[in-house]
Length: 176
Image 1 (cartoon, rainbow, N blue to C red):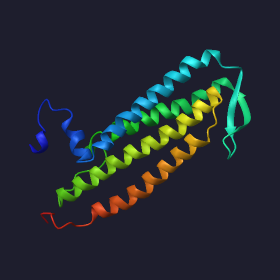
Image 2: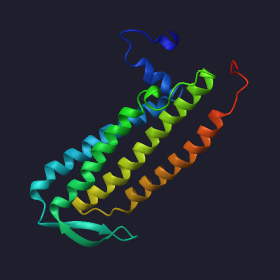
Image 3: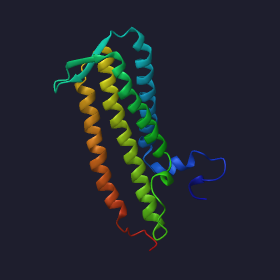
Image 4: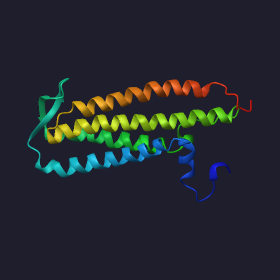
């Protein structure tokens, strides 16, 4: 089996999914650590929160509306569910795309790009929602993390579309 894949080699699929780009594997794990950290911070801080918390922020990142403190659970649930789903999906190319029997090399390239795009998307969502939750809970200004998360999402979507189109094109190393 290629790339050291075989029985008892659980991590081999992830290594193939990210190819030579180890940074994507590190970002994938760092995003999960961030999600767990934000979740723990919110759950630990929740009992001490006042009855109302900021729930809407203007363009400057300052709060301009308040709501009940239980409001933090909606974005927290989205962060945890979406973050874990994207983490799971980005771990194995077979979870993302069907194999292409006509051109296995092209299918491998598309799957690798799809997994990398999911990792970047997950990081953007995690930073965006994490920034929102931390500002709701601790009163921090939300603007820097919201801007970083939104930028990362735009980069993930834009580069993902471009790279998927390129990976779908025939390549000189394809067998067909």
